[in-house]
Length: 407
Image (cartoon, rainbow, N blue to C red; front, side, top):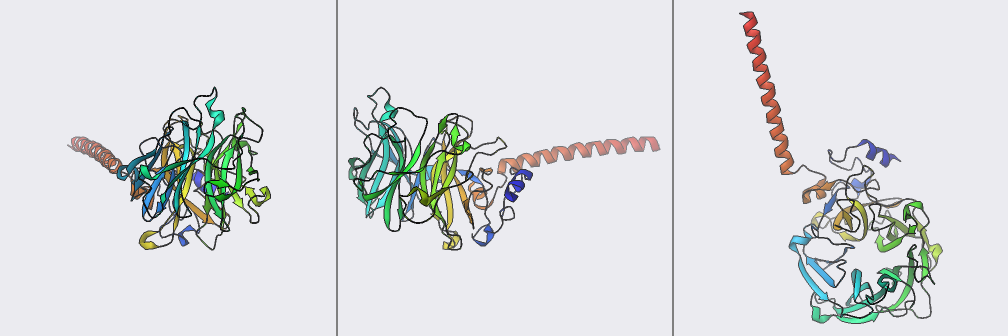
């Protein structure tokens, strides 16, 4: 409640955000926590997924027609500094030729793998055929950017054949790998109104444990998980606190319609025990991140992942969320990758006051809090000179009148 009051009473566009607004976080990070958002791509990059490996940031995202990886030595200057490589394009007229969604690059058992969803464009309703597929890449000692080093494995083995499935990710709990994805309820073949989260143990990077149906661990239940009649849980991502004093492990997922400006993120806390039991997970009562209630952009923050970035000088690690959002209420159009910090306290993760913070125009604005751009400073100086000139002119006229009266 206290955080919400601070947010409502503060004009985030005019003040510098600091640790005063977010108590206790200044003890954890090398810089005071701020909720500033930085856009890291100018191009449309929906469903961004970032991996930091040996000093290089690799980002995959939805292109729709192929699997492309951007690689850069900087996350905050990602697009201009990126080497952009298309590593795989599906052949035409296959069950996986159309609508390639949300690819993710993972380093598992010493090799690179990419998980993605795709459909069959030859069918009457292509989206109904979305399933999970896997690419196997080179050893992680080598770059994942060589297209010749990738092979198509096929569908993720032992996934339910008839279940619609997208947005697959791999998480590790107690030294075991689990696959989590968004799917329609079992037996639903055509109704697109409900998406749930499912989990299954993996036998290998290309296969689930056989003879075990994935478990549903989340179904839309809160009003804010719905857009109209569509209840959506999708884009699951692993998140774990880097701070021993605030232990928390769980899943961040996206909810409501990705085609709306109300798209948002919420959490599923892992309570311990068998991850395949639904009772091992606890859904948050409110979203982790939404668009600002003031009506300003960015809109529809969602479907990203989390990167632990070393602090300045190798100091305390910071957790950065990478997600897409739009600058207008444009739905799927103009979804660009953004970065915003995750804060930690005794209750777990939070992102600012639960809303996207002010958007920084420059990297320093993200690192140290909102700063005025050079253009803003110049404009303010011009306005100041104009006002000063106006006042001085009027004062001179006034003095002239006074002198005239005295004469």
